[in-house]
Length: 112
Length: 110
Image (cartoon, helix red, strand yellow):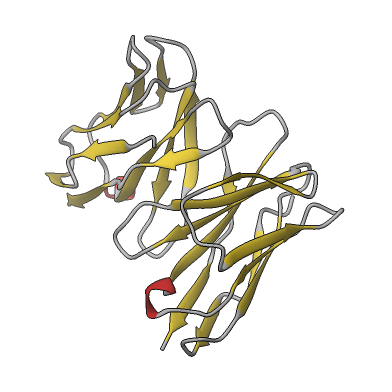
C-alpha cells in the first residue's frame, strides 16, 4: 500500500525563480493538504484541496498556488521565490472523513 | 486566527523516566491530533481525540483531551531511546484546517 509520494526530494532554486512540487496521495485518500515546515518549527498550513478545488487556505501570499487533478494528485507552485521560502514542503493526504493525515517525506527547497 | 501552543519546547530525560508534553489552543477545538517526527523525517500520525475529557492509551503513551476541548497532553511512561523525536499536537477547528503547535523535542539519554 503506497503512502504519500512527493517529488522531487531536494531542490535548489535562485531567488525570483518559480518552482513546482508534486504529490501523489495515499491510495483511497482524496484530500490533499500542503504544509511548509521551517527548521525547528511546526508545519504551517498552506492550503487544502478536495474535489479539485482549494477548500481552505492558510496565511500564505498569492505567490503560493496549487492544483489538484482528477486522480487526486496535487501540485504546489511557488512564484518569485524568496530566500525565506527555503523550507521543507510537506504534502499530507487524508480520507474524506478526516482522520489522521498521512504525510509524505517532503521536498527540501533551498532558495539561494 | 487559531493558535496552538506547546510546552515545553525541549525535554531531555534519562531512559526509563516519564515525559509529558502539553498543548493549548486559543479556541475550542473539534478534535486534536498528535504526531511524531523523528529527526530528518516527516510527521507520523499517532492518534486523534474528539470527545471532551477523552483519554486514550497506546502502550506506554497516554493522550488526554481537556474538558473544554482547548487543551491536551501526551504522557510517555518509562521512555526508551526509540521515543526520541519531536511530538506535535495539531488542532482541528470548525474549518478544514489543522493547526500544528511548534512541537516538543524529546531526547533520551540511554
